[in-house]
Image (tube, rainbow, N blue to C red; front, side, top):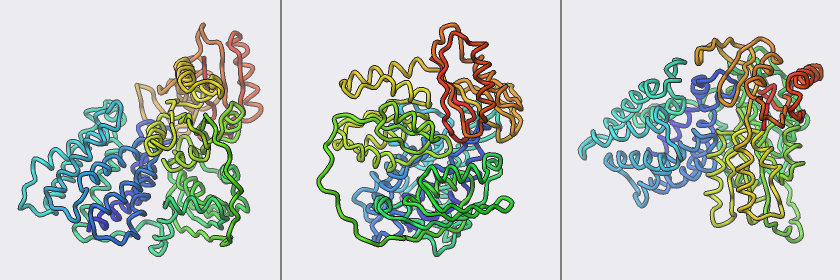
Length: 535
C-alpha cells in the first residue's frame, strides 16, 4: 500500500505539474517548480516500482535515495528532505500504524527545516510543518489511517491557502506557493491510493512505465553514457512556453546536447521528435522544459562489449565545475579553467546525480562547484553531502552566470583550497547582475504593469521595466545597474540576439558608460536575451 501511495502521488504530480509551474510569482519563462518536483518524485518512485519487498522501512529508504539523487531545484531538494525524514522515522519497521505515520511526517518537517539555511514561511516548509503539527494533535491509536490522512491533507490544503498571507508577493500576484501546491498534490495522490483509486499517467502509455522509470535509475544512467540510443518522444507545448519554443531553437539546443539525426515535426501545440543520442535523459529534460511529455520510445543501438581503458588517469589536487546553458557561455567557463560544465540553468535545473557524476569524473581531491543559479545551490550542496568522505566538494554559492565568471577569474589551480574559497567568495560579492527576458503572462508586481510577450528588465531580482523592445529593456537594466564605481561590464548575448542588436548595444554602452570596460560574450543562452554583469 505504501508503494502504491508513492506511485500514485508521482502520477498525480506529473499530470498536474504544468499547473504548478504556472503558479510562478514572476512572469519569467522559468517557472519550473512543478517540473522540478515531478522529475524529483518520479525518480524516487522509479526506484521502488521494481523493488520486490513489502517492508515499509526498505521501501522508504530506497525511495528516499531515489529522491535525493534525482532532486532538482530548491523545491525538489526540500521535497527529498521531507521524505528523508519519513524514511528515518520508518527505520526498522516492516509495517506502520497511524501513530507511526503521523510521527514520520512530523520528522519529515523537522529534517526539511534543518536542510534550509534560512527557512522562509509561506512556502512548502510551512505547509509540511503546519499539516504535520495538526496531524500529530489529531491522531489517536484507534483511528483508521484513511481518516487521519484525509484530515492531514485537509490541513495541508488550509496551510497552502494561507501562504499568501505570509508572503506578500504571493498575495499581490494572486497565487499560492508553488512548492506547497506540489506537496499537497503528492499527499492527495497518497490519499487517493489509500481509497483504492487508480489514475493513469497523462499522455504516456501504461506499458512505458518500466522504460520511463529506467531512465531515472542511477545505474542505467551510467550505462547509457557508453551506448547510443534512438529516441522518439512527443510533447504538448505548454501555453506559457509557446513564445519560447521554435523548431530552430529547439533543434539547436538538441544539437548542443550532442544529439544527431534530429527530426522535429510540429502541428499546432504538439511536437514530435526523433533523434540519436548517447544521453537520452537530457533530451527528455529539454522536451519537458517546453511542455508535457507524451509517448516515449528509447531503443539501444549498441548491445556490445567495450574494452576498459588501460589504467586510470592521475588524480588531480583541485578541479572546478560550473553549471551553465548556452554554447558560448559553456565555452567561456572552459576557457577560464573550468574542468567541466554541467548543462543547466533556468528552466532546466540539473539533478543531484548529474552533479555527482561530473564531480566524480573530475577525478580530483578537491572540487569547486559553481551553481550559477539560486535554484541550483541547494542541489549542489546535496551533491556535496552525497560525496562526503569520498571527495572534498566546495560549493561556491554563485547565483548568476556573471558571479560564476568572476569566481573563475579568481580561481588559482596552483593555490590552496582556503585561498581559492576566500578569493572566489570575495569576487562574487562585488558583482551585480541584470537580465532581459520576455514576460509569459499579464500581471502586476511592485506596482509595475507586466504585459505578456513584452521584454522585462531585471536588476538583481527586481523587475524595473517591461517594454516591447529588448534593446530598450537592456538600456533600462544597464541604467539601473551601472554607477560611478562600475569598472567592468560583461554583456552576455542570448541566442535570439541578432548581430545588428549586438552592435546597437555596443554603441549605446560606449556612448553612455565610457568608463566601464566592456566584455561582450556571444553566450547563445536560451530564455534570456541579455545577461549583464557589473563590477
